[in-house]
Image (cartoon, rainbow, N blue to C red):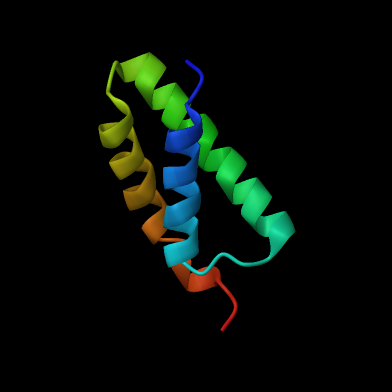
Length: 68
């Protein structure tokens, strides 16, 4: 499944709230999150909202790695 522009923007907004600012890191994190979301939707037949929640929950453990 390919995500819509609006869905991708929702993930980008989430990254904004987490302070992911460096472009190269942001692109990598965005790519990983989108891939995970697509995989969850396809593999577990969840909708976008549920998949986004799952991926965001998973990413919480990495927020301590950002620069201060």
